[in-house]
Length: 303
Image (spheres, one colour):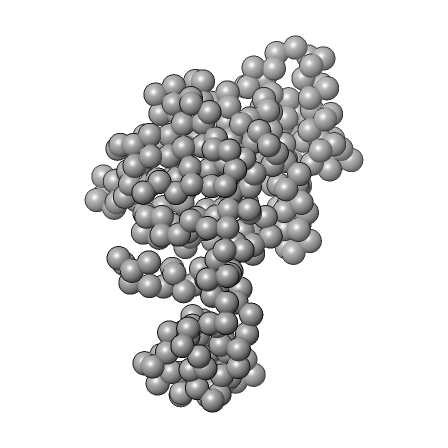
């Protein structure tokens, strides 16, 4: 069944499949329909996120299925697709001796901006938008992780793309840079642009995305708004702090979502839709991380 977003659909993915030569089935028939705005693809490492992103970015051939943005076939019409595409990969390579300005000039020429005056205006606008004007003459080899990511978004915006793909963009960023990057992505997303955010960091999706999907072992196991996901777990999440040796017994009788060591004891969160699971538990507000961890940890075939 095709999952549908609430906004006007722009990105359509139908029965997308990919198996590597090693026999690993990375994608098992992905169906998604995504509208304008920031859409989150959430899943653990190895779930198939990067494979999906590379296919959408026209860098990897699928074994079967369809991808289209505004009716343009991203598998059969790669040249046309790349004119509509902005991509910030997980590993974004930069020439360390080039300045920020020179880097954007290089990418602009690659994307067909041949007029020098037009290119200069574009670079000025991009550097201003990602708040790197003051660093335009600095060599990017000396940039912080957050500055590199903002420069990466700047190059992805060249050509006014309809689909912008960002793959694990905040991994390794400190909280201040992560917040700055979140604000930048929110500003970029508009009525005519899909920003597809692939991440394993739940807070990225919680802070940014109007709609999200969870991928596990090459399959989409949930397609929701974050608000709807939390509503599903209302009054069903409980927390207790117990001795470490009690944990095995709790796991045997409760649906344990997460555990965390706290001052020598275990802080345990469980899912129980039939009331308090034990006298030691107190009700707590569900989080998107609770929802994600509960789904991601279930056996294959159980959603």
